[in-house]
Length: 406
Image (cartoon, rainbow, N blue to C red; front, top):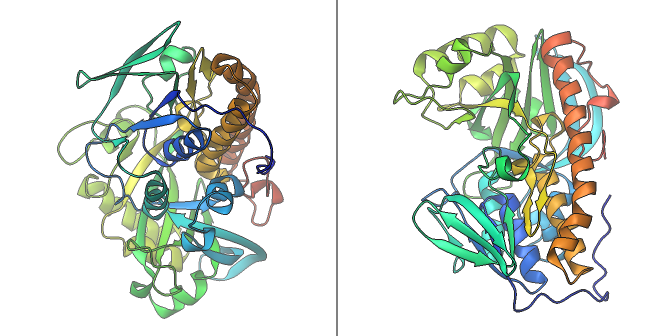
């Protein structure tokens, strides 16, 4: 596990140097905040033309993800998260077949994003800027944007997600590999489910497992940041096998007729697929889990991919988070890995006065972290979606970035 900052330790002051962070999501903002803490003049460039705050998916919070708020922010972890005390598995009649004490905290994507952006500010946060390429010379790195904009920095960090165009430049052997299934996602207010379902779900991470599929349900803050029990959202991810090829292509074609590769947002999934998904929920899932799915107004989905980086650094340029290695969600460690990459980068730059040297020292440990996580979640996915050996209560299936339960 990473060590906490020694606030009395001497670290290199990077004042007078500029850093560009490409990607303004949670990993990018965490990186930007930490680089600014080292003295860098930091600018963030996000490809999406509008604010990202209305995205509502859930995040299981691990120590690395929360570390900024635990150590550096005037906002505290309890202000951006909610929690449960148990993990449980339900049978086909809502019977609890396994339950154990396992406290976890959660947030919604929008809640966490707004909190990080509040700390970074919007003056140097630029929307609608797609980084199309870059070149490095002896004096720094120039990034070229599709808008025609050009920016120079002493350090460039790409935190632009699983579809990062710069991964091919830095780690050309890395390819996105489809896992064989998709994750249906959605949320519904706790106040809109039946009393029985609410009482069963409000204080637990809840699993419902069927042959070649499983769903996980847990509470997250409401869109306005509400954290109180009864005022939150119930969030789920339901993994369903879809054959690669025409079946996947058709599913991932949105309501406008545009084919997408990775995700379809709320309102973009064709009605016929939503109808089929709801029918399957009633047939396959525990009634409580099925009710959450059925009451979701606009479910959305993500195709599940693997991507393992062979390189994360090239001179003064770095990849972090899903822009480097993308791991299936089964360990609930995607945002934690991005944060861990950022904190390790902070440490490397704090200990060195040379950016390329710092990145070269930072890279091996982060590659190893990403590879270990990728291997573990691949095994977890195989147990659920292929072998049907996802056993309730098995310690190997616990969340964790560094290992089950860690």
